[in-house]
Image (cartoon, rainbow over all chains, first blue to last red):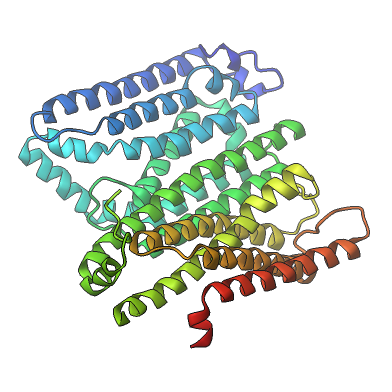
Length: 287
Length: 156
């Protein structure tokens, strides 16, 4: 499945890696992702007796798991060992698209419905603890997310990652986890006892998007060690434009939250509603 | 009737804000990307001589551009669910927004900060004149259209 890294031409470190390490990594990835799929399905069954669970959440969760899988094992992930462009495609899947889809799958909500009450309370208590609260603050999550990318691409971590399966696993876990935490803190649908204001979340999103685009332009001119100029350029452009697609989706979701909350404000201000109702054809039903 | 005017004035301003943000955002993100980067290929992804300050400024321009495009549209949706949108007023604000952004881009980014130029390897004067001239024209036309569409506010 991953034979690519052993005869990766021009990539010395990769050829010294024992085969077994990568095999174990891929088996573990498949186990974790399989558990994520099966666990979600089981939780849906257990929770199913009460309120209906929207099918789109299941679709999003499954698609998210598939995207994460495509970024970690299979042809794109294999090509990523020798091609910076393929690496960037894998990272867009793993660090941006998969987190967004997984967040939209609302796993915490599902867990709270499926778990027995005592366990549900424990989970809620865990989410309210100071360390979780700090880690899920958009500023912290944004710093770890964008900062991690800067460290990865502007230090010798990038070539190191291709030589060591442990570093590789750690980097990819970091990218997925902090991608998820940041996305959840910005546009999460799960209950969040400490959700930041729309203003703070918008500010963090703008800074993270700016950092992403600055880094991709920087990489265009200064590719990581061992990456050829043409490969570096196409990878950097993929990072820039591919990132834009997910970033604009995040903006739409974040501002839609603001828009939806305005409906409550409107209900709380009866005078304005009355004024609008005076005019024919101006009262709109909920979408 | 007074109730209608009470709620009409802030919604009118919200219409203006929506159009203005959307116009600025579209000029920064969509027009720049599709016209100058992809169609004409006058702008480069990264021209290799760009300074770090310019690179940083460009990154924030880029992020703000997309953000205000989306925000402007949600503001429009907000006005639309409360009352009928005065479309000419909104369109005027959009055109003014495009003109305003192009003017700022043409004067501040291109000339004062030197972030990037309109085109490379050519005599820039006619390009700058056309850019800034058309930006001022769009701004004035947009403001006139908006003013005609909202005479109440202009007279008050």
